[in-house]
Image 1: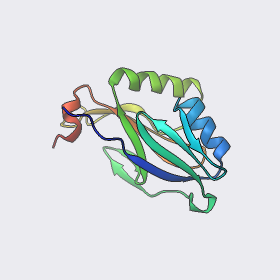
Image 2: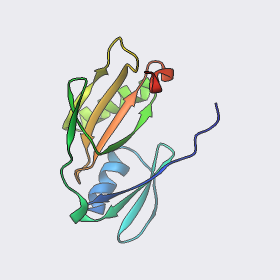
Image 3: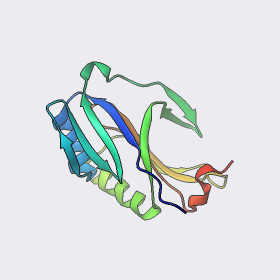
Image 4: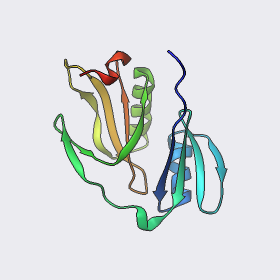
Length: 140
């Protein structure tokens, strides 16, 4: 399997200090370049950029997915199962309020996965997921 190219995602935040605390300190994403209006983070090998744009942050719509009310606008990463469990424990220990608690979705079905949803301090929704069998990522 060839190496996947890193993706780039820019998103609005209400506070760069809060973004640094969440993405840098809590999630452990190394910080890259920055200015007074934005900051880059290394999000598991991908470039995400928090742009100071308070007017652009707002509540997001949700849809039902396997019994969970999932934020429609969200981003995240697929981790190994061990890394997913470690992150879930670190987030719980930090007192994180989950939008969708860590659990297994689609049990016994194609695409069975561990998933959790949370909001950053600026209201952006993130999903972290893992597959016992990564081949299930695009299973129908």
